[in-house]
Every structure is written in C-alpha cells, then in structure tokens.
Amino acid sequence: MKNENKGILTAVLLSLVVIFGMELLFPTQKTVQTPASTKVVAQNQPVAIDETISVPEVILPLKNDTSPTVLIQSETLSGSLRLKGARFDNLVFLKYKETTATDSPDVSFLTPEFFADFAVSSLDKNIEVPTVETVWSSSHAVLTPEQPVILTWTNKQGFIFERTISLDENYMFTIVDKVNNPTKETISLSFNGSIIRVNPPEKGTATVHEGFVGVMNGTLEEEKYPIVKDEQKMSFTTEGGWIGQTDKYWLAALAFNQKIANVKADYYYQELYGKNVFLTRFVMPTVSLKSGETVENKSFFFAGPKELKVITNYMDNLGIEKFDLAIDFGWYYFLTKPFLYILGWLNQLVGNMGIAILIFATLLRILLLPIAGKSFESMAKMRKLQPKIQEIQERFKHDKLRQNQETMALYKKAQVNPASGCLPLFIQIPVFFSLYKVLSVSIEMRQAPFFGWIHDLSAPDPTSVFTLFGYLPWPIPGILNIGVWPVLMGITMYLQQKMSSPTTGNTQENPTMSAMKWIPLIFMFMMGHFASGLVIYWTWSNILSIAQQRYVMHKYGVDK
Image (tube, rainbow, N blue to C red; front, side, top):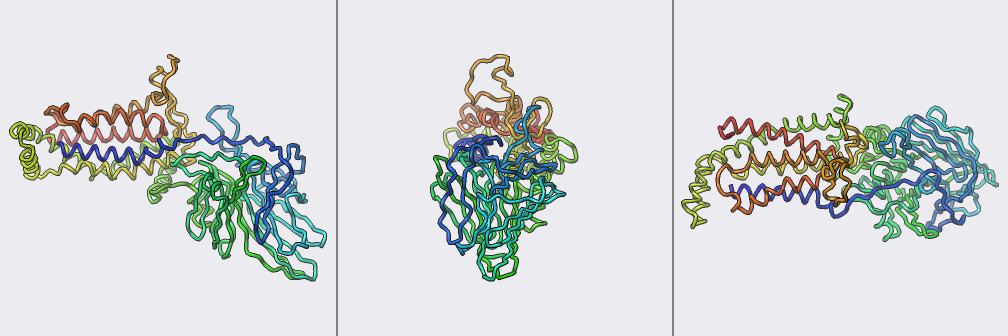
C-alpha cells in the first residue's frame, strides 16, 4: 500500500498544482462597468497615430455633449448611436442583470469611455473625409432589427458618404460604407474600424483571459492590457479574422471581409490626459475610386455576451473565422466546448443548470465506469491482501529491501497492480479542469440558480459555516469563510478516502498516509472560494464514486 499511497498522493498534489495553483497566484479581480451616464472631462483634442493611412482620432467625450443620437432598441439591446462621429457609445444588455438582486439594473456595456466607431480615410489630404467631429444625418430616429438606419454626409467637393447600419435579433451590427465620387479625379480610400476603451480593469486572472483578443491568419492572438501598455503597439497583417476587447463574459469585436488579404490590425495604447486609452482597430487595404464610381465596404460589429450558440452561429453563417475562440475555452478546447454544449442542452431539458450539472456528472461517471471499476477492483483486492502485507512487514521489519521484494511478489501472484488506483485520478484531471473552465468563463453559468441558497452557480457558496450563517458576526479570515457545499464536498472526500485506506497496520507511522489525511480538509478550504457549481459537481461525483466503490468492495468481500 505504501507505493500506491505515494502514487495517489502525487496525483492529488499534481491536481492541486494544475487546477488551483495559478488561481491562487493570480486571484480574480472583479470587473466594474462604468455606468452609461458617466462623462469624461477632457480637452477636445485627437490622439496622433503614425500611419500612412490616417485612422480615426480618439477624442474623449466632453462633459456636456448634447449632439443628436439614434436610439437602439431590440429585445436584447437598448442604447444609442451618437451622430457626432457616428459613435456607438451607449449599449445595455436587457437580458442580463448586474447582480442577482431583484432590483438590479441591466448590465451596461458600451459607455462614453468604451465605444466603437468606423471611418473612411484618404491618401489625398485635399479630400475632406468624415471625422470624429462630423455630425451625420440619419434616415430614422430609431435603429431596430426591423428598421436599419442610413447615415449620410456630403463634403465640400460633393463626395457622398453613406453608412447603412443594421441590427439582427441578437448582438451583431452590420456596417456597410459607400462612397460616391462625383468629381473627375481618381482618389484612394481606406475603410477602418476601431474599438476604444479608457481605463479598463488591467488586472485579471490567469484562468480567464481579459484584454485584447482576435484571430489573425487563423491564429488566436490574445494579449492582456498590461502587456500592450508596455509594448505600446502590436501590429498584424491578416487575411480574414476579427479583433476586439473582451471581459470575462462580454465582448466587443470587429470583423472585416474574410477574403481580403493585407488587412492591417493593431492593438494600441496611449496615455491621454492621465488616462489609459486602449485601441483596437483594423485598416482595410486602399482602394481606387474613379470618377462617377461608388465603392463599398462591409464590416461587422459585435457587442454582447459570449453566448456559445450565438457566437457559433455568427462563425457559421457569417463566415467569421474561429469566432468561437472569443470564449476562453483554455487548454482542453476539445473537451470544454462539447461540455458546454452538453450542459446547455441538459439545462434546456430540465430547466435548471444545477440539475444539469448533476446529470452531467452521472453521465460522465457512467462513461468512465470501466476505468474506475478496474481501479476500485484493484483497491478492493489490495485491501483484501492487507493482512498478508502486514505479516510481511512484521516478518521483515528490519530488512526494507526484502520487505518490498516479498510485497511485490505477493502483488504479482494475486495479479494486482498497485499503481492502477492512480489512473482514474490522472484521467480526470483534464476532465475536471475543462469543467472548471466551463463553470468559470461561460455566460450560461452566470447567475444560474440551483436550489436553496445557491442563486449563482458561477459564484462561491454564499453561506458561512464558521459564523453559523451570519448568526455569529465575528471577524474571521477570508480562507475560513466557506459554505455548506464545500463542507459536504470535504466530508464526501473523507469518506471516499476512508474506504480506500488500509484496514490494518499503523497508519500513524506512515508519513504518506498521514499527509493524505489532510487532503480533504485542504480541498474543502480551497473549493470554498470557487464556483459553487464546481463544488456541487465534485460532491455529487464523490457520492457516485462512494456508491460504486461500496458495491465493488461488497463484491470482493472487503466491505467490513
């Protein structure tokens, strides 16, 4: 049992390092959205960006900006498009609340400090193009999925700039820019789009990516805000793809023509009036516009929650390359994405994500039944051999080499592999970590209720057993602030461990066994600060393991 115990302890410790180590080193920081009504007091001056083709100037909003707007209204969104600069700077998600409180406001996403705009640039400096100061005319006062709006502006030379903006039933805006050349000259134009964010939360967690994100030339390019702040600028040249800025659950992204090569994409940082300004932009290759001709460019702007089905539909129907990678699936993409689909389907079936997690754990246990069954059979056989092992230890207690030789000979004769008990632990590490990612990053888990006091499966258990659920309001260290479900998980881990322990022998003299006794307690306090959905999954999985192990032990007559 000594070799087996060492193997199990090693597997458990590896699990701790892989699953929890990075989270402990980089604790989660809460993202606080700026209210939509917030204004930034700043001088009305542009940020200079060194490019052959000029890009939109970044101008922070004035305190009392009374320029006209077009309302945005749908079943999922509300907000406005500012006609000055044709800027998306006010957007609220109607299906998501800031908190689980009954009077919680809807999630405010785009604000005057987090906005997007599109522009047309020209190499010919004599050609007047729309700027952030340009006030466009709109065909309608309200933008809805049923009613697109057409923005128009004409310069002094007679060039007609037309921008058609449409919105689908979810979170995607389609932007079609047209420019008509009434002159006798040929000019060069470039279309571009930008997402600008002022003072975003720069500290996140190693578990969930927050910051710049995009797919260029088929490769996911993620960078956190502090990295781009240090580098100042990161540039890519791509054919197809998309770029954006992401939070844990929300995404603002720009997608351009997927079949045009040499599209320039940038992650950019500049300090402006003491504020950190982060800019994501794409610049299309220049096109020639001859006399009497009209040139057109289509692009897309996504601003919404990272719902898997919605994101995948845009990837499939609009052809946006690898758009599903906007969701941080982590190392085990091949497991995490299917897990999220299965949990979503089960949730639709039973109407409760917590129940869906329990069903998922049961199905997973059934799938792993052959592997786990052989492991439990091995444990049962070794438990049955324990009296003989004890006899060998007593007989050769002064000869450790002979003791190990006799023990291994006994294992061989009984056809028992002492290391087989570790196999399910190693197999379940990627499975568990994938589920951990699902529960940590997926919008489907956010504020999903279970029963009783669990109102958000993506948040820790809100109860506190060490304060008797608030009846004893004494100050306690944060690590002791754990709820009922982590305690239940610890108890089931202890019972499972007890069933796997030797029935004879002085375990107090075995340092490996002594160390393993602390594992349930360590996990209990660690899991007390993780998503309650994960704790519920692990607790239920432990219960299923105990039932299966109990059956196998009874089968081999070692249940007493």
